[in-house]
Image 1 (cartoon, rainbow, N blue to C red):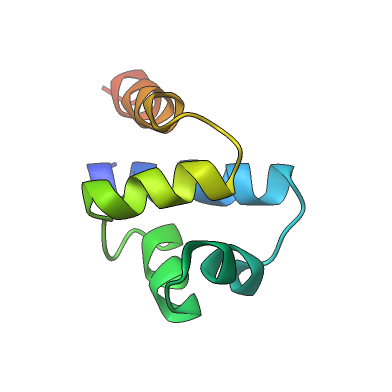
Image 2: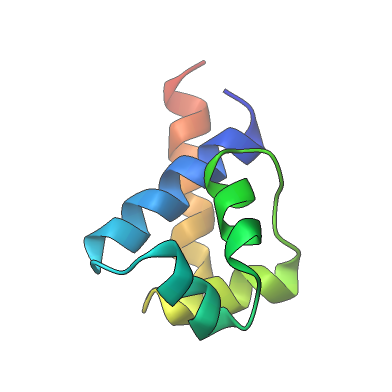
Length: 77
């Protein structure tokens, strides 16, 4: 699994944890719904600025998202 796919898995898990749609998350971050979809499918990765927006919208720290991605990457090695 590459970093984009790992981030996508983490993002989707956290979005579903707080029971919001991709459209809701996109609105909270002021980005396009298609961009959220691309992130979740591992086809694109966010900038640092967007990562901070996503974390805020998901009510978690950006460090938490990064740590979760790292865990996914290292558990698959």
